[in-house]
Length: 402
Ligand SMILES: *Cc1c(COP(=O)(O)O)cnc(C)c1O
Image 1 (cartoon, rainbow, N blue to C red):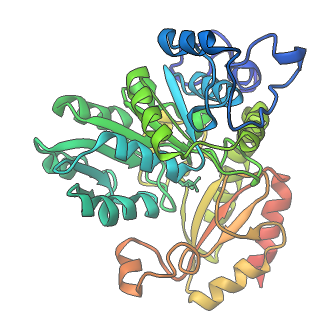
Image 2 (image 1 turned 180 degrees about the vertical axis):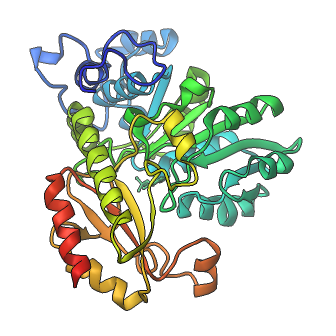
């Protein structure tokens, strides 16, 4: 896998993925001949004289003006992410949520409608229904991967089809060609939040999806030490979203951008281990007598396994499972018994994390609301880091013995 010549399934890139991770988007000669792209810690950029300012505004020269509109290190990051995703252009944000909010505000007006698969990131769903709803934008939530219901919900006012893939924590995987075809048939833009897949495992643009969104906080940054977001797509769309970012002021800080660029250097290596650990843990759990069910798209038992195999190179580090005959307390004892993963939200970092969704993201839901979205008392979500595979398996083996 490591030295395969193409960047991903179906890719037309001439260099391998890890070469893009290390060098993609970067100038060969950097400021002051620095090896790394420096941090420009400045809020404003100055002009030599009035003539140079006039030249900048009239010729729209490619330089910086004010921190809210951009930063030189960010431009490198955006080129690298566009290269990894195989897209024309990229715009980055302070967080993944800033990216989705800014994109939706840039695109939509009162009377427009969104159709989304309901296993969306809960804050995305909340923003669409509770906030955009106040501005006269209607959101239709469709059961994940029900393409017929999605098509039936499309009408003349529909502006966007949105899904996550894979979804969290159930790991439903979208048939990208089918999803893109729906958008094309009705002239509606499609957006996939591919945070859980990453461009290493899946590249939606190659299958006709219009825009890809990432929370860079997860695998792309990869070290649980920064927040970030990105949208990749056609130049025209990205420039429109970038203008809105300049108004909303939700770009990232120079320091976080630097860390993200640094993290991306090892992105392929990290993803290979995340994929190995995820698959190994999923297989171990599936064969364990105390486990009722495992949600992992790399397992034959997963509903969307065939779709996942078609679109994904690997299946990531996230593993969700149900403990057999366990209530919330018995399940919590397993969470508390593991020694390597820490208890916490998020995923995609080098350190493994574990959580019980009823207490983490869904604590403010009623039991009925939780059951309606498939969140159970005996559910555990593990975000495998890049630790030694055998150590992780041994840790879960001892925790499940208790
Ligand atoms: C974490 C996450 C987000 C939000 O990203 P932040 O960087 O936390 O704002 C959006 N979508 C998915 C799938 C995520 O996992």
